[in-house]
Length: 249
Image (cartoon, rainbow, N blue to C red; front, side):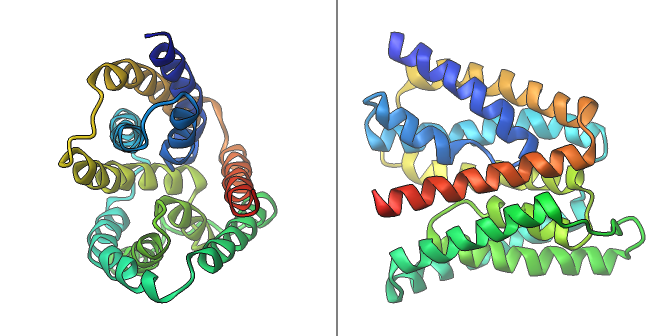
């Protein structure tokens, strides 16, 4: 029980921070759960479901504040879902280690862009067709590369949307909405194999829900767009550092 309470507290902390970026906390929670001696299948299933739970609570706030750009989010969801299996299939023809090094380099580039690049916000001026086109293009990238690398596509979506001129808050909120479905899809795959720990799930779900509500409130009410952009940049650097550490360790 003590281990589950610790897992719940850690889940709350990371979910609060990562909700601001809209990327979900599973990529950090899985190794944390493993360090707490939780079996890997249980850790993966729980972390993915927590992603969905957190982003449901966060998206409720973001939708009320009209931060989710549905005209872009829906095409991303559809195209990414279609292309992710293709990326997963082609991954067997390329060295995973090479792919992860390339992905780490991309994250460092994207993090630098978040911290130092200033784009001209323009999604308010664009037509529906353009927004749908953005979603189709970003969904293709996120779906294929996410499947190829076996990582969350949200890490691609946020920086690309900002580069396209989206307000950082809207880029983060739109990605959070997408993560609900992408993470739940991954969870179903693990749950179908019976890898669930209900006690762990209930305790960490409390931490995840509260963290998501707090993170969404901070992003929507307390932080300015440029601050959100910097937080996203730092998080991307953190993800890259973790991946590089795993590669060289």
